[in-house]
Image (cartoon, rainbow, N blue to C red; front, side, top):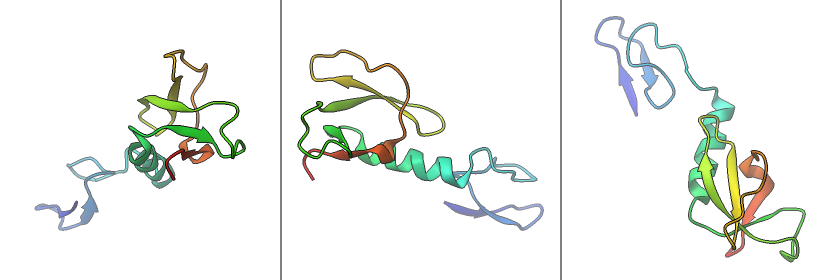
Length: 94
């Protein structure tokens, strides 16, 4: 939400900045977009973009990191090793 500081009158988006002066960003624009994408994908079955038929497998988001990176689990509940950028995936449902 865009708010205006009562002291310095600067406007800022409080989704990306501290709520006190000098309103420095605590997350980069890139990481904020990545995190938004991860939350949009949350609860959906995913597959790698490079796997158009889903032959490698489908996944659920297990967790979303502070920078928007996601950890995944398979349908059987097995965790994939590592963190992934959500732009590498798409929803199986479309």
